Length: 302
Image 1: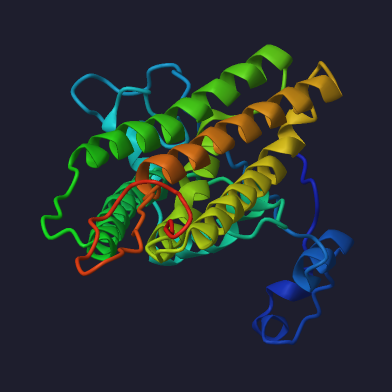
Image 2: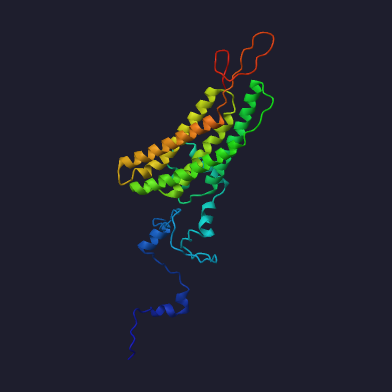
């Protein structure tokens, strides 16, 4: 007698060649039916939103690629390569979303799990270029109206623009991230970098239109850009700030910092780059009076 007993038996008639050619009906179980009908969907992959926070080293100093599913080291090139994994269409959609103050889904739907550094670098750089060029053109127009023939460009404006814009788009995200840690709010540094990097895009068209030599128009444009960028940043950051362990007070602190910083930036742009006070006197007598820089009656200011 064999010491192995069969678990199941096969019908003997299936061993014949004629039975193997017969059509057979295979009935699916309930699990198989749900899978084939689409009722059961595969579980979504776990997606992680990376941040500028040092993590455990996963690559060697020789640049060995990280293991699949393991986050690269903070100081490795592989770590920063993920922040440039965007195309032109992605950047275009994020710019359009940044000028929409009524959208509060910028981080959740537009940025999602793919924050980048491409836009937050090139957009502030474009703002710096636009500020200098537009201010130089506006200065030339002002000199022409005042009758000056020796118009010169102020290259120090480039230095001021570099320091102001880059400090704003790098310092404010770090400040808000630190405040978020203090109040216990789930604010991520890369989220703040993207909000501020894309949030200054409104200043590119505003800088160009501010060439118009009308002071009222310039003030309206600056105030509009301030309101637009502030509303966009508040609506993007407030959902995370409202989850702080300090309650509403923490969210109000974040909002106050955003408004104060944006107001300081708008005033700096207005009084440094678009503040051309020029007066043209109504000359009397035979000769034309030289241009004056007063605001007395008979003069106009641009």
